[in-house]
Image (cartoon, rainbow, N blue to C red; front, side, top):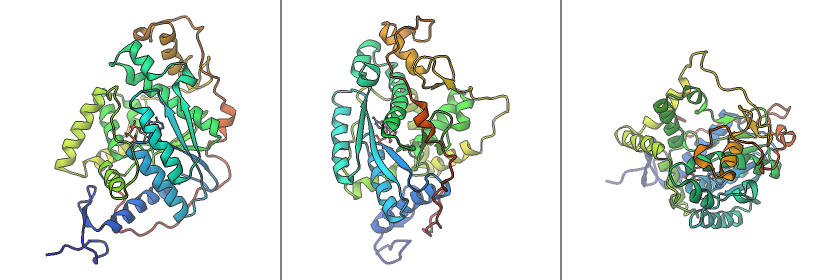
Length: 354
Ligand SMILES: Nc1ncnc2c1ncn2[C@@H]1O[C@H](COP(=O)(O)OP(=O)(O)OP(=O)(O)O)[C@@H](O)[C@H]1O
């Protein structure tokens, strides 16, 4: 017996949606996938007309699908966004050099301007050099801290108002679990926020907050998108790996576990005593920081002094080489000017946003 798509009731069902278990045809799958992301954007008032938006593009599946969908929705719903691709070259031979080739092809395919910012130009160190110095164990700490700041600096160079990243529902649920497992309640408080902003930061958001990784992979596969699928050769953070395995096991038993964990994170009420550190600026490079020096400057100082394993110690402070962070430009990216957010009636896609 032919099973029909539960949405259009006409075509043959070709896909079982990992998020809802519904059996749908390909065209309806594309439609609900794209429309759910549009609804997330509208519900959360992520953009204003004429916003300049940088898509953080690594060449991997998430950010490639993000670039494809952002371009499509911008045209379909006339968001009026000016979009760019922003890539960080961490300097990982055999990994990032190959994935950047994918981003360069994406630039042609999506006809979006591309800016590449490298760790070598910003920090004077590539990840290949850092790994030689610090080994494989802690290198993810360096990479994560440097990437966060490099994206903000790239955004300032592009003079954009906003950065969007390809973090998906699985990534967010995983972070909720990680913060619980580590007892990091301050971070737990804000890790489910779809959008972060604040003094000196470029507004940053996650349009895939409710989008399942499995659906992103299916979408990329059916649409034959050009993406790079190799894992980082310097091995992902081991502790996060355990949270990921646990989440994947839960998903097999109960697919809604991913959305349920995100909802739990959102609803979590934290005692008033649990406070986030007050943000100031790094005395040395001007980037935002809750301490005298930002994490990147501390890590860099350790590297420059040949003390990578002693980065938290009390060290001399005369080795700054990160260019000064221009916060005046960045403040333009805050969301308090008079332009109204894009608001439209949501499309009726019959599917719960989750
Ligand atoms: N080198 C980079 N340059 C620009 N953006 C990046 C880079 N690395 C990560 N990002 C951004 O951060 C998001 C999450 O990165 P993560 O390292 O978790 O990779 P991922 O989940 O495999 O995503 P992707 O499939 O897009 O690589 C990416 O989707 C992308 O938007």
